[in-house]
Every structure is written in C-alpha cells, then in structure tokens.
Image (cartoon, rainbow, N blue to C red; front, side, top):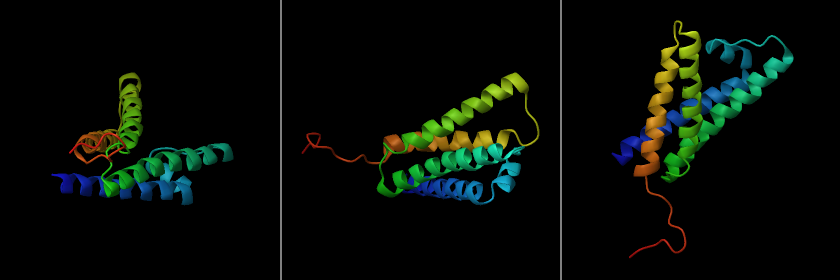
Length: 133
C-alpha cells in the first residue's frame, strides 16, 4: 500500500512539475490548454508567474513528500489542490460548467485524497523527545 501510494504521489508530482515548467517556458500555449488567455503583458506575467508557482510548489511538495516518505510535506499539495477544487466548485455553482470542466476537478480531487492519505500513512520524521522504544 505504501509503495503504491508513494509511486502515485511521485508520478503526480512529476506531472505537476512538468505542467509548471510548461507555464514557465510556454505560458500562452499552456494557458490555452486551461481555457485561459492573456490580453496584456501583465496578464502574461500573471499566467507565467502564478501558474508556474502553483504547479511547481504543488509538484515539488508531492515529489519531496513521496521521496522522503514525509507526510507533513504532503499537506501542502493537499491544501493547494483543495483550494483550487473549492474555486472550481464555486464556479460550478455560480456559472455552471462547459466541456472539459470536470476533468481537472477529478484530477485535483484524486490528488487531494492521495496527498491526505500520504500525510497519514507515510512515515513521519522523528523529532527530539518523540522517539519511543
């Protein structure tokens, strides 16, 4: 179970890191894949900066948490993706959905669950005074 969970988190982390790198290198093309477009250079900078940060932090946290088997770090992607999922739910309620709306929600929901499971199942580092024999 731990090995499968670690592998899934690692693969997900790679996916998010690659997506973040894509926003850094090709922001207009990456944004178009998410239904976004920049109308000004400020908008382009926001897409490049904000989306890169979101995906890299999420992905790197998943990779580090899976590699080190540190569940505490996995709370970061759970929170990041949970916030994104909340925003999508609000949009669904207020504005409705269109084609391709639900796939990102499914991906985010799956990785929120996996990250939360990892935070509980994967071993945590021992701190001073917490070691029991």
